[in-house]
Structures are given as structure tokens and as C-alpha cells.
Length: 297
Image 1: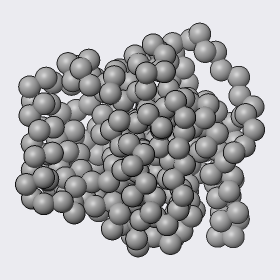
Image 2 (image 1 turned 60 degrees about the vertical axis):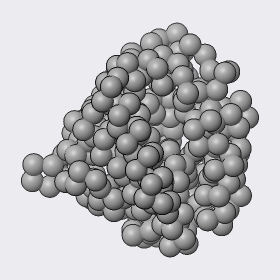
Image 3 (image 1 turned 90 degrees about the horizontal axis):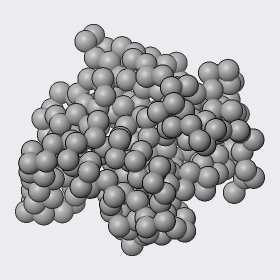
């Protein structure tokens, strides 16, 4: 793992204030289709870009701490997935991973990003895995953090139960109450109040229709089958105290990816928020190891 990154951040500033340095942007990927995103490090266009994909209850803003640190050496992009923020939803009511991967491909085209390190967190790992399976030439390295495995290989009964339970909860609670009741599950007992508030803030901003589509995506996808098709650089990591995608679940994903599972102590599901120093160093080290792939491309 690399040494601490040379970045000075005002930790006393609110996360919203820190986020203001990376304003929300929009870009067209097709007629009447846009992707909302944030970026850092525009001055480092010659370095291998880093692309960050958030999970089902989050958004591009959740990566602000990674923007601050990693944007000092390379371009960093994080999208609001289709159906999140101002990003146009995918067409299907019950989509599959390739639809999101297609949107990701079009977004990278629009940004003129030919090749990148791709990081997927939770549901974002499902999209990242599908993209890597179908566009391996664009992925210099694939890092999956607390990956959601998906229920695509499960029985229809299990898939329906998982899908319908989550949809019913959203319909009953709405985004604001859902964030109040569920955001604590994303973190370990060691998380500070700022991390808890930031997870809550991100979750409260989900768009119900986009969240519903993502719930169907989770039910329809089998991440392991996509990883079997990707032969590039790959790493899998999870927080030791992740109760949503626990180490035992992520171990199976690591086995499918033919790699060793990395376990981060004292971290929960949204580890990159509560243990940002450790996760940012993990991402940085993976990017630096992938830089050799970039130079050979």
C-alpha cells in the first residue's frame, strides 16, 4: 500500500462545502440522454483516469474524500448512475447489467476517456463487472469494493423476495425516511458522526424510480459470471465489519475473480466514507499498479 497522499484538506469544513469544489456537471451521451457526474484533477490529463461507481443508496457526491486526495495526481470521475441525480434512467423497468454498462461506455466516450481504472462499490461493482466483461480493452484495472453479488443465479422465489421486499420498503418509507432508518447499516460502530451524516445525506437524495430500477438490476444479475469473462487486473476488498456484503460473501466474489480478498479492519459497507484514509490508499495503490498497463496501451 502506498504512503499517505500529499493532500491538505480542511477537515473542519462541512462535507457540502468540500463538495462544492467538485460541482455537479451533466453531459449528453445520446439524444435526450444525459449523465450527471463530478470530477477532479482536470490538470492531470496525461495520467491514467480513475472512474468511481457508487452503490444503490448513494451517488457521485459520496466520493468527495477520494476527489480531494486522488485528484492531486490524476483525473477522477464519479457518475450518478442512470436513474440517479440528473442522469437519464435506462429504458427497461427491470433492467440487466449490460444496459448500465452500455450507458457507462457512452459516458466514457463523451468524456474522451479511452481507458481507465474502474472502481465499483456494492451495486456499482455489478455495473463495473458487466462493463469489464464486455469492454475489457477499456479497463486497465478493476477494483471491487464490498461488491454486491446479485441474485441472478438464485431461484425465482429468492429473487422475487429480495426484490419485492426492497421495493415495498421504498414505497412505504420514501427516500428521506429510508435514509433515516437504513443509513446506519452502511457503517461500522466505529464511524464518526460526520460519516453517518454524509451517508444519510447521500441516501436521502435517491430518486425512487432509479432506485427501483437498480433493485431489479440487483435481482437480475450474477456478478460472478461476468468476472469469469474478464482476464485483466482485478482486486476485491471489503470492510471487516460490513454487514451488508460481509467478508464471507465477498470471498466468493474474490474466488470468482481469481484473486485474494483484502479485508479492511474497523470498516463497514461504506468503508470509503468512514475509513477514507485506508480506502483512498487502497485505491491509490491499485491505480499506481495499473499505471503500467496504461503505459503499454
